[in-house]
Length: 401
Image (cartoon, rainbow, N blue to C red; front, side):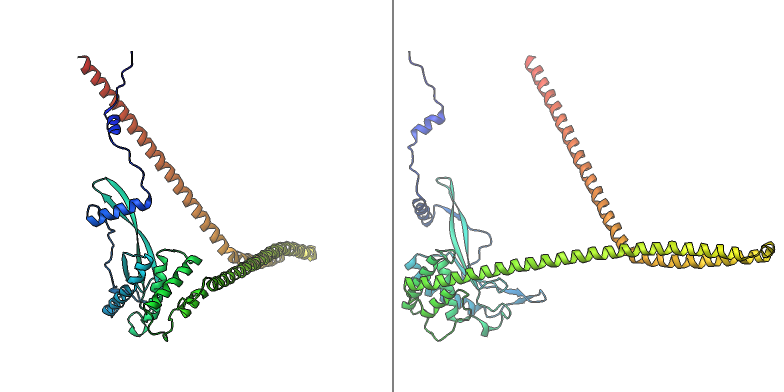
């Protein structure tokens, strides 16, 4: 006899559904883009999504006060000119961006591109996927004087920056592939006559030598020539980095030598202070011994007759006491001066001790609060367990009845 195999509803549904082949990244992207064009998929854009050709209203001056920006229409016209003139290059090299706006004057750098992920939700297939888009920002104003229209970027500089940012849409770093792509973009830009005023200078020349050469020659370079210039720049940069490393090592060595010298000087000063304290103590003891000897000598000089007279005895005692008082006052003055010098050190020590004590008290309080919380949690857990047990017992009783 064959055994009967009982299947769940989920297993039956799985067998009924046809197995789908996994899609590649390109196929899945094309599929979702077609659904987006048809309006089937809902695209959720971020909340802070500025409009195309966005211009800023205010900026903060040195006193951190809001100042309104002028000539916004001129900047919007300049942005539209850049966008419209670059369209054929973007189609030729398949470089697309979803946003092109003005960069704020306070931002560091004159242009940058952002890679942003947009959530796509499909109500039909109940899938979630992210599409990567690019936002391009170009700063056309002078950061120090943003309302001065004479200091705005001219068309040649803004166009060179725009072409640089277009190349970043494919190559996000400044590698040799980026240089080749920028060279090809410059060639297509010259065909479209995007640099009509070739006499205009670049207001913000690049710190990379190969990029400056590309701008001067407008892309009229072979791969070998560009490779030579690029390698020279990288070698010079590596040499500069090595020189910086050597200078940093030398600075570290000099700083260490200075620290050692300072430590040695501190040790010597401490030894000198200790020697001075010892000498002061010895001098005090010697002065006491001298005073005692003087008193004994004076007592020995006094004759027997003078000793018998009470007035002479009183004078001798008073003189000895005066000498003792004067010597004690001098010693007290010296000790008070020494303590006055040591007062700031004592104050610092007392402050540190108070800080340590406060930290210890805070630790104890934290431990006490943590222990209380743990005890409360244990009590609550025990209460809940007891309640559950009582409920179970009551349910069992009801079932029996």
